[in-house]
Image (cartoon, rainbow, N blue to C red; front, side, top):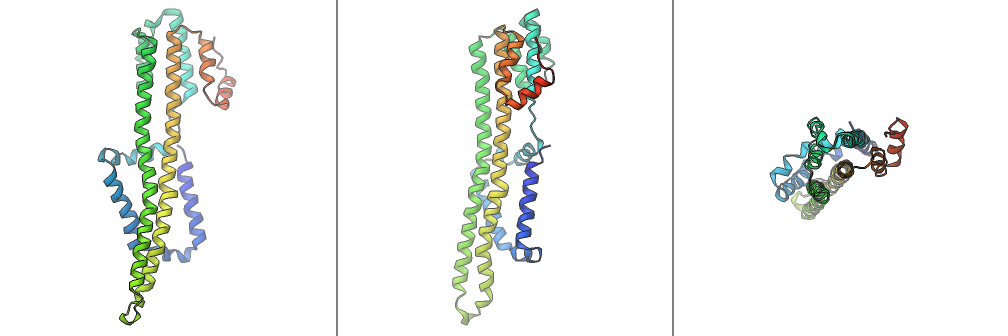
Length: 263
């Protein structure tokens, strides 16, 4: 589990509460402001995006919290093992091993070279899948970036509503003075709510989803380069070194220190 996202939310909330003062928190609870900012942002998101994307919001939060699900050093080991088998017994011997692979993308990649497809075609088809995946992920990230922009906008709408009501209440003869504080509070608190939603909720989710996408892309491209090298009959040791070069230096060093020096 990746605790950085909830930890960031907790730290932000604690610092804001400390800055406000626990005894003053009641001053920042304003139902009309919540209705304008939270309700307005949700309504606009519903208007902007189809149900198929909105219903996956719990899944998106889960992705942020789950941590890196793609063990690239492990898949490098698997690719090297497959390369060793392919050099000794031929590509057809990989079909049985492919059926033991749980990851659909990895399994499909191996089966494509077993079927003796043209290497350029294999690369094209697999990279096309990664591009389609990146496009879908980009749509999801864009949804949260849109939320990050909408929340402050509705905060400004709330500010305008509060200011207008405040100005209308300036006629003291009609008893409007009693509504002046409420209108002023709505005018200011909505901006606070909008900024909070944008910078503490929506933008961090969009950024964390971007990190998860980069992790998945690295995993997929490692597989693509690996199966193409297997199909070309490359030496397993060369394949390991070639794939490790695409990883971060710390991950490469860690894997080598663990004895991953295949032959």
